[in-house]
Length: 158
Image (tube, rainbow, N blue to C red; front, side, top):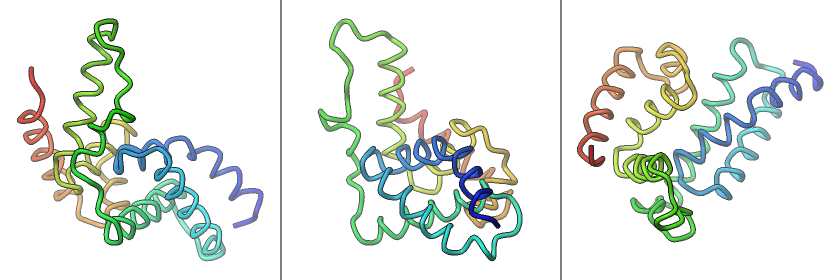
């Protein structure tokens, strides 16, 4: 892959990559660090790349997230911190409240379920591509989506 093509591909998916990582770790600064690490790893290996660039880079980013999780576990309530919640009291809209409630609920479900849900519902990726990123069978992705939805229902007030 040429340097120019790599840069073009990165520009096309960089925002989604950062959003994906922020959804997993709940920390924008950490998401930026993980995205940078993933893109450096991807660039170093870009001469061997063949296939779907977005799925490949998301997989590298997911691996960076898992590596970081092994080094420093993310607190279960990281999105409950005052810095993470920017809902302005009574003036906050119901949609804003629901969005924050969903973000908090996502931090409370297992990592694989959270990853599948974020990739499917937030990044609009098909099950097959999620399976490629997570390196699991498509049926297992469907299972994580189903169980993840059930777990989210337990944490979200309807």
